[in-house]
Image 1 (cartoon, rainbow, N blue to C red):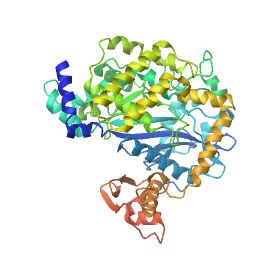
Image 2: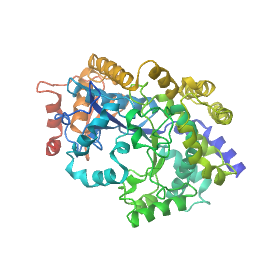
Image 3: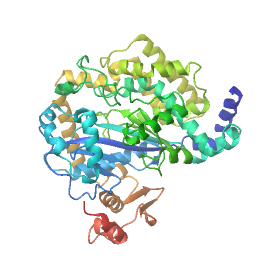
Image 4: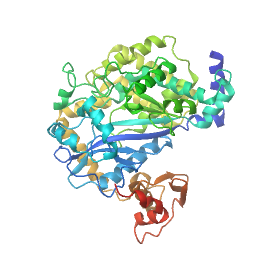
Length: 508
């Protein structure tokens, strides 16, 4: 097996293969609260001009009507993914009422406690009410309204095919079986290193009055209340392990069959196996087609980054997963998997600036390993920068996100800090001179307006090299990046004229 890994390393050093290695796809899902300028839950209805939540693939509401769901399309590269999230947030903020803000932290502000009864009823997505009420009754509303970021990650399809064809046809009968093996291996690698991501990127150090919703034994502040096992996790007895692909899938199937989970969406593990073309109950179909991306669920909102997550976070995650392609699983895998949850829980519940000696040594060993990967495969500069940031945070816990938040909270309080960030961000975005600031360097103002209207209407967009594609189903329209367009009737009317079929799902 060692020889095979050396052969794979050699193949991935070939220019064509190396380019595919660093062509991973990212899609981001972020959940943020609409709050009033005093920190109370917004009473305003979901923005009327953003149509429609039942069909819009980019902008939606979540567990409550004031919890905004942002979902970006999959793109190659972390920067493009983060830029897409920035675009969606700019569109949403421009549609908020003047006394509304987007709350930047995973844990809702303390005035929310006064609004929990209101939030239980503030829900107008009738088509989703059954599953929403099920989750509220089973897990409690306080845990269901925690904000977060989900990271969807997929390897280049041609890369997987070539690795399979050249090295694994004798090990797996089909490419789908190899895909399942490779992606689940990445799940296991992430699971045993989840504690490191909690240390580096945990960002929910306090719960304020919402601590009543969590264990009484938790001593605040902590690194990440959300990432501990009493936070965003399944209840004891319903937690699915990562011991092996078969065991993982069989447990999920059992929970689906016996009604423990209403669908795969109720599996709250740190990483899920996913396939784009199968619903969240079709586990068998997904495995037959082959997993084509992973969904990482345990990332707090990063209030220090405008989008709620940074390029460096994505690049660090990508390096860990890519390294799994060319590295065997550890010899003591079973033992490490058995301890992974406990270790992550301990790290999550540490004080924000706490660090034990074993953590520093173990983290540096991971970073050194990834540094070697970067050198071996001549990774682009952004990956080297991600390792530099991670190394600094390991050397100095006060530089972690939770460490920086702890310092700021000491000088004010969580509500004041969150509102200051929210107000500053609102003011900055409202002052942006361009319709979509994140892409203003590469696309004309008219094209920015076009994409903005597409986002508002839920029309699919794709930003290519010098060209923009809009689509509804099989109907596609193409536009040049610097093109000027006739918006005499407005950008929205322009999009609806190009896609009359989109008129069918305007109204909620």
